[in-house]
Image (cartoon, rainbow, N blue to C red; front, side, top):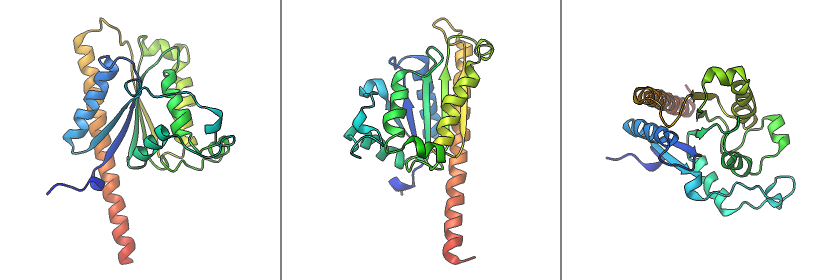
Length: 224
């Protein structure tokens, strides 16, 4: 008997690279393949392929607009609500994620969520208590990024800000450096193995959390 749709653990993966055949695209494929081997489902949101509009308009801003949510944002929020984790995959361009990824944060993750909510760490209804997992790639070396302060800066302005500001459970970031057109095949294979290992560990964590929640629910009903 197949499990019900509501019983399947879901990963909401947001991909931000215009080239689906890029190494970032291979990261997506490796992650999906590993998660599906564990019976879990990955919903891939390829922002460029979707033609996602990253521009936040004044009427969409929580303290300015009329409270209406556009249909594309509503669709993303509905998917996020049913997911147990948010996964981001993107290249680092000029020290930051691509603008389309920032636009996803602005329009979707920030929908109905003001700076006051961030300050109070109220927790976005679609994200509260869920883990954040990020995979980023860069053409330069990790040592160079550290030397220039880019790793720490990105951690503070993107990872920690999203995790804490939206009331998420935790944040993990897998950084893959020296991703260039002529990178060696064995190096690429090693990095994709890291992605698969991370996916497998994440699946185990989510499954354990699911079991704990069910145990707590049973204990609560029985009064033990």
